[in-house]
Amino acid sequence: MKSPLFAAAAALCLLTACDGGIDLPGTNKVSVGALKKAATDPRVERFYEARQWQPAWNSGRTRELMEALDGAERHGLDAARFRAMVEQAPNVAGEEAALTLAAIAYAETLAMGQIDPKKVFDLYTLPRPKVDVVAGLQKAVEADNLGGWLESLAPQDAEYKAMSGQYVALMKQIREIKAAPVPHGEAIKPGAQDPRVPAIAQALTNAGFLKTRAGALYDANMVRGIKGLQAEAGLKSDGVIGNETIDALNTVLSDHAQQLALNMERRRWLSRDVAETRIDVNTAAALMNYYRGGDLAHSARVVVGKRGDETPQLASNMFQLVANPPWNVPQGIAEEEILPKGAAYMASQGMSMVDGRVVQKPGPKAALGLVKFDLDNKHAIYLHDTPSKAAFDTLFRHKSHGCVRVHNAVDFARRLARDNDALSEFDRKLASGETSTVALKEEMPVRLLYHTVFVDNAGQLVYLPDPYGWDKRLADALGLKAPKRYQTDDDTAVELGP
Image (cartoon, rainbow, N blue to C red):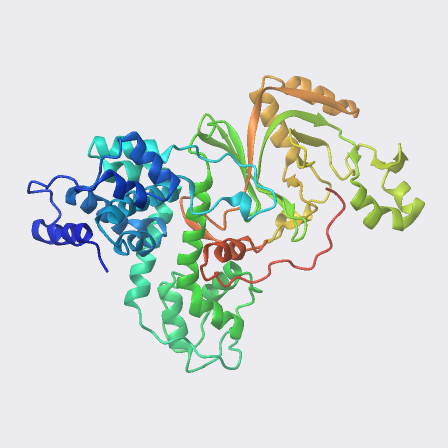
């Protein structure tokens, strides 16, 4: 049952075209006792205590809240979740408290996300937003700026706005397209004919993988589109249309929308105060960006943890460069991958036992390469060079034990050293062949993120497979259907190193 004030606000919106063109009645007449009984949520109770238990809602503010909720789709959210709090109110006092609860719940979702990532992931140390939503709502009500305040709580960066706009466009497209799914059948190879080809071409066009084509054959233009779809979905990008490719094609629009919703949620988890000089590693994409003074200064491919040894979602400060680093092998790696191979193998890798631990001496063939980027955390996660360069040229670069291997790491280290007025010192220490450190003038924030949708350096939205299965984990936590994405591990043996 819709509450009287909710219904009145809806009717008022229709009569005035929601343009604020008429005077609004005063707030509800609610007794203090009834309101105290209805305000069962501690956040709601705190809100009314600050108001000496005076009601806050009239038809104008109610209408403004409902209009704000109408925009929930722009954030990948379902407005019905918040509207239901009000529609189910049993009486006037319950409605008053329910409107406040709906406003607080929506505000918290925009400001900090629907869930606490630390309850979903074993390790999550990225800085979270700190917003006093109850106090903010109080000020917004007093200033008659409820809608503006709510909208200000969501991330305001260009990437979030691009994802938001694309989500709205996709949902509109999904509602308008009523095409039947492409059926399963025999695999279709390039150059072949199949009655499903026109439907496949239309689905590829709808998803943006195909712009123009001619003829009834599965032609080269379509093959390029199918390979793009396969690569994005984590399938073998061979251009052969098997049933897994058909499944990916049939779900691509809804998968994109769901991925956008999940990744907007991830962005809402992040503090809005981001250091202008920092390093961001997107472990889903295996890419690193170095920002200096707010501008992108350097990008590089990286190799990150494999499934089972995932690189965590971590915030940590880089405080020094280590030239010619040794590798103190973690006990687990030593016991499982090194000690069983015997003394001859260890000698061939420059390894020896030091105080009961396996240690690899420094050098260009050592697992850490020629430089290590030290991060201040207790999880032994850091960035480093590697002698194993071939992995940087692969599509799926999830092959480490959890640390981040940086492409052209020495060049990047020299860039950081130059930016810290220490280039000559770093070059001298690197050339010595001895292990030594170069301190950064100021510790640099490093964020290890997991974003399966992001805006690339060309300004384009990129959709990725879900290499760690964390999209599915998040979707399950939110009670959503997970995007259909395939295992991206390529069975390549993990190369020696952290």
